[in-house]
Length: 353
Image (cartoon, rainbow, N blue to C red):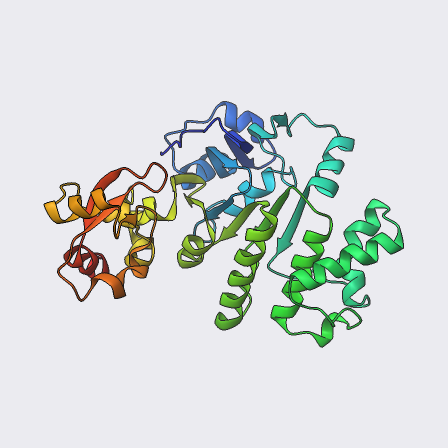
């Protein structure tokens, strides 16, 4: 079991030792549970299912945190514990250092209605309401006046690229457009946290990529804290600032896309990374050779042609692949020389499995 270090700075969500056991005597079963038993063994012995097993992680304000895993890994159950749509059997969830588990019904309703929005795989639009009325539904529930509701709904409509479609009904829109309406509805209430439950998995591949790009573009503007569920590792590394990979209710590994691709913790995680074009994920800093030649040291001393450590390898291919030149790599924050990169390193990152 891998337990990520919970960072202290700028935390928005902190989950500590979350368990979810499904069954009529979940608390008693958890109290007596032999934690060395597998999920199947627990089910055979007790008739209960361990859906989430002692999970801890933190999400920083303004980041996109991806929870990924195969079907049955516990990812959707875990994320539903954040808002207590599913009650954890044990553990603690804090949002802005407030304990969600101890919230009364009023505070929990306020959290779900005003601070958090969800976007699901199935759009959940009202077929009898026009697009603009669907978008404004959350504001209507809040009691926002019709003028303000319309203005905010139109702003969200434009943000997701559906300007001019406000008077149409959902049946008149494609699947991708309907998902944009769902996203606009979530954004209209201006939540602090957005939770996405495999939102694009029902879409055609081309539309799916467009929606991923759209969401990334929107996130640059709105900087919300996002928790994104997916079973697709390529989607995870594209969307996530950090990724938690789940298996059998546990987190196998947490890290940035680059950390996971460069250093998978076990075979399960490695299997996900095998088909990933690593040069699109790895950065110059991760691949750089620590020992620097005189050539790169001279360039660094002149402040010439330095490559920042956070630059992705795929953006360097045209610059480096056809030359024998060695380039200094500098820390993206401090500007200190940390190594060098050349054609051999770029080519290795393009061919490594």
